[in-house]
Length: 178
Image (cartoon, rainbow, N blue to C red; front, top):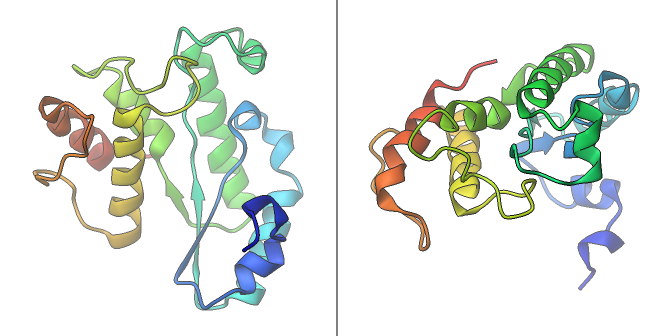
């Protein structure tokens, strides 16, 4: 079996008939508009050609936690709100240019959830990667976008996540908009 790093993009895209293909920018460059051009449009065009029945979605990443010390956060002056504003604008612009009509609003949902009882516990200790709560929130955004169904009131809670946080996370995923 090949490791993911040993699989070329065309092999993954052409491996089977996909219903949905998601694309995203790496988080460090997510707020740098120029980093999407021309690559996102070319990737989207290739995916449409190889999988004409698949929905092509753009997954919006999230701003780093306020306590993040990663050097990449410096491009946003170590300011979570600045990073969010930059990535939100870049994703919308890039999607338009690449003719992608659906964006999974995970970054927006993270910002909304940070204003709830969950606070800034959406990332791991590194301030970049999703914690269990952030993983759940991201999955809820994928679910709502792909299936068009609400997560509000869904009873399932993954191991390691405080069930008291579910309403805030579900509401954040449900109300996230671009």
